[in-house]
Amino acid sequence: METRRLGGDGPALSVVGLGCNNFGMKLDQQASAEVIGAALDAGITHLDTAEMYGEGRSEEYIGAALGARRDEVVIATKFLPRPQDEPYAPGALRKRILDACEGSLRRLRTDRIDLYYQHYPDPEAPVDEALETLDELVQHGKVLHIASSNVSAEQIATAANVSAERSLPRFCGTQIEWNLLSREVEQSIVPAARDNGLGVVPYFPLASGMLTGKYRRGSDFPAGSRFDAMSYFADRFANDESFDRVEALTAFAEERGHSILELAVAWLAAQDGVASVITGATTPDQARANAAAANWTLTSADLTALP
Image (cartoon, rainbow, N blue to C red; front, side):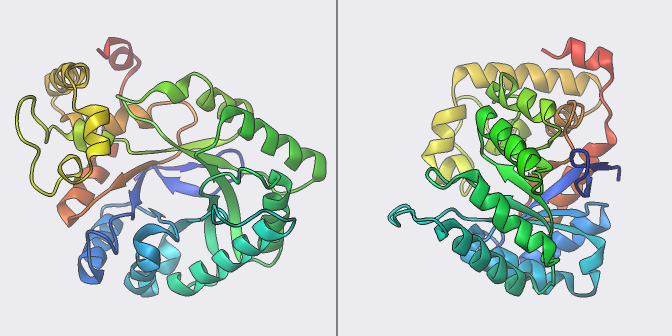
């Protein structure tokens, strides 16, 4: 599978990454290991997790599953912000980051985190404190690259300016929700990332399953599906406007011999600055199907004709 550099100086990521948020939640350790094995065998080398996924079990399952294959992958994980009920005082965010890093390293059974994300920006602590602390971790070799997640265009620019002015490590990329049904980020966040040299890592590329074709207009949601289990996602996407778009996109993909899932991944991979598309999986077959989507390279004519 093709690999791409995240930003100008980040790690090389497989163009399709494995989102590991199902591990420790929907999947037990054995099922998680089977998905990881299938993903690696299909050419996926980018594993994306977070300390909050499965309350740490996702990281634990990844560490147990990789074993001797640890050096074949880029492990990306994320630290949580300070608890909302914890008043901010200088140094509080630093402690949170250092504690989180040690916990992730232990659970992942590794000596370094290849790509470390600030999962959410701290609403009170200056970004300087995060960058200074991450610099410590980089200097000690515990973290190789740093990135942001769920940030605004203004926060991207501010962090880039602080890094330049103070000679601190810079965020090499940013992770955002982006898919064919959620394109608001194209107005400001994606341009800000490009302007500041950050690579982009989209998550939820399938719009919580809406872009797989599993949901049908007027039909009940499949039992156990995300729409069935979480009304938040159904309320966002299960509407006539989205179904109209999905039906048009499905026809577009099928005319070209592909599925709408393949279109959803291939379209993101065709966007300027996108390094890797995070795709979740609950079965080995899903992991293989997600990896196969990287085989379709959309032409400029395809992108122009997209409904």
